[in-house]
Amino acid sequence: MDIGVSASEEAKSCGAAKKVLPFVSAHLPGGEPAPSITPSAAPQPSGPLATVDPCTALKPEQAQQLKMEPTGKSSKSTATPNAVYCLWKDTDGSRGQKAFEVWFGLTTPYNKWPAFTPPGQPQDVNGRKWLLLPNEGGMRVSCGAVLAVTDTTSVYVTSGFLDDDSKSCDAVKAGLPLVTGNLPAF
Image (cartoon, rainbow, N blue to C red; front, side):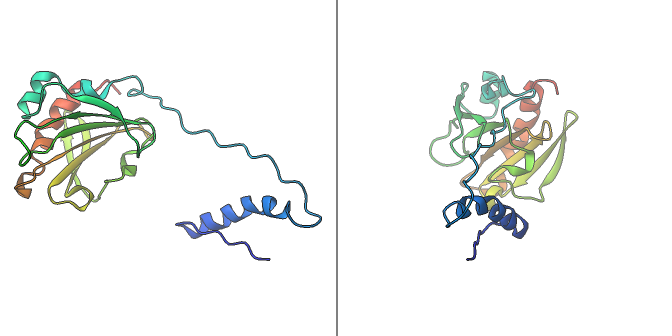
């Protein structure tokens, strides 16, 4: 009998196969009972962002400076575990400037965001080391920036410009000093 497991990395395939073996053998004649499955605990949010509302990353007058609505709306991510974000809608209609979003990855290292597209451009903003990501996720009209808060937490800022990709990072660049100044100490 052969057992095969597929994973993105070859070393992980063998580890997964070894974990499966006792459960397969429990169904074979003379096999030992399978061990109980204890799910691994999901990482719990901790650190300086754990209790902070991402909508505090911009004050109403700062959002208006970026040509966004003064009040953002916070939500929880459905794609990135333990990530929360605030979205400020743009005020120029359906074209032009895209909404401005600030994401807190409460258990997401800076380089594990779905749209993280290295190499990026280092940005020193008020002593914080951001990485600017033009063409975020391979889209010319989008721009992101990411900041490592701890080894396992980060901040991700994203916006863009639909009608002129040369302006895609303008709001992000203008917003980074504002967001940085409103983050808790870490």
